[in-house]
Every structure is written in C-alpha cells, then in structure tokens.
Amino acid sequence: MAARQPFRVMLRLQIKGGMEKGFEKTWLGVGDVIVGHPANLGQWLLRSHDDDGVYYIVSDWTDEASFREFERSDEHVKHREKLHPYRTGGSMTTMRIVHHVKKAVAAA
Image (cartoon, rainbow, N blue to C red; front, side, top):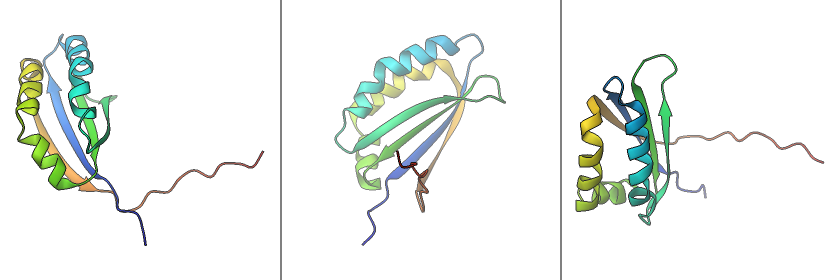
C-alpha cells in the first residue's frame, strides 16, 4: 500500500516595494507558529527570480482537514495580521502530491 501523500499549500504573495527584507524577517519570526503545529510537515519561503516583489510560501500538511483547522485558528489569524502590512495582493492554491521521483544515490 502506498504511503499517503502530504497536502500541499502554495501561497503567492506580492510584497510592497522596499519592504522585502522586513517581510522576510517577519516571516521567519512567525514561522514557528506553523511548523509547531503537529500536522505541519514543514514550510519554505521562496522569492521569485523573474517577478520583483513576488514570494511563494509552500507548506506541507499531513492532511487537508488539519490544514483547514489551522487556517481557521486564532494563531493563524495573528500570523496573517503580522504579514498583511507587507502585502499588496496574493493568492492560494492547494494540491496533493501525485508522484515523487527521488534522485538515486550512487553506491559508495
């Protein structure tokens, strides 16, 4: 039986010009709230190479129900309030990993 794949959330955030460093610092400061949740498997902050001021947050969860529960929590609302002043817009998409091909490790 195949292992259940994580539920993945990807946010696209447009950050106000000149506020990128503050956004990154704030994101790092509130990240423990998310990764401290028992259903969170980790998260990543990525900065677009092609679009100025665009960031992506990728977060993996054990399942959708646990993510949705966290999304409605007071902890998450406080987290969003701290990041909101940096944003001019954004979007969210959710997905489930269908396949994962791992790089083969050469024998020593």
